[in-house]
Length: 254
Ligand code: FPP
Image (cartoon, rainbow, N blue to C red):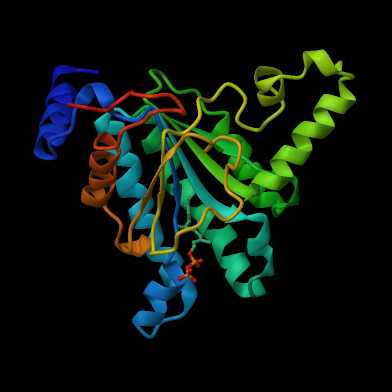
């Protein structure tokens, strides 16, 4: 990080009174409310997804600037296939277009792309574009951006159980560490903060294992309206929580 980037981080964090030592390493987001945002404007749901891309851009940029190391975005769940065909197609197209337009610039900014979920069920062009975007070399990695695509936590856990069986693990070899090595998030630290937009208070089959000790921040802001200030407010909320992990005292005191 050069001195200009350090100054940008310092200014950003101090403007929200954030402790630089207590920035969550990993933030996971359920981006919700695109459809309602569009319907509120008399538009079709796809218009909401299109506008949601601007929020993705803003959040990724703010995550890099504020020192978050991993950002997971729930972009398409296994249940989302039940939406109308034109909406599913529009979401896939949007993903491809965004990757093509943004990836070079993101790589230059130190953003490395990863995915979790079953990509094999995605359309070929989408799958190929994702593979190519994920394989791009990034100099100094500042942020791992993880897109959850055709993902559901129950599917992931069942995949992991199958991995355990396939590898003939003995009962006494099965523990948290070995089990996690079969999850899609192998090698990635668990999110400390989960944000869900649009006023819904549930986790919808998202990272059930990994969110075991995460702090949850729910906001009524619809995803296409979600920007830098909402992201930093969520971190502020996180920093004001007392995290005990089942024990007695571990605070995020500033
Ligand atoms: C949930 O809103 C949102 C989605 C299912 C898709 C999220 C996709 C994007 C933000 C755009 C593309 C993403 C990337 C990473 C380029 P909803 O449709 O369920 O809204 P509703 O609850 O109001 O109906």
